Image 1 (cartoon, rainbow, N blue to C red):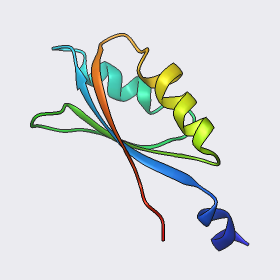
Image 2 (tube, helix red, strand yellow):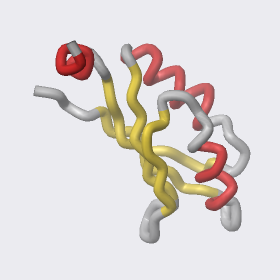
Image 3 (cartoon, rainbow, N blue to C red):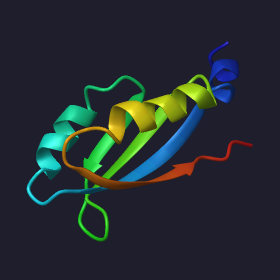
Image 4 (cartoon, rainbow, N blue to C red):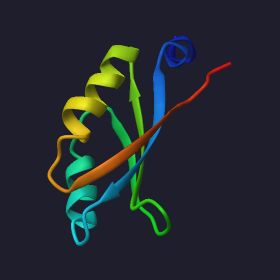
Length: 85
């Protein structure tokens, strides 16, 4: 049953650019959002890497557009939908 449910899940990696000095605050806030499975502060072109998982593409989209992108300190995001075989 669990294997079947996993195939129905939709996942994405989201890369985020944060305003200078707000990276740690954003990581803490992102960890509290439902459907956000993993969050990492990273060095490089982006400041935060996260994995999101939801039972529908609509829920995935809603999480990104209304819960993540509207947080104070978010400059930009890049979303990569994970392809499942």
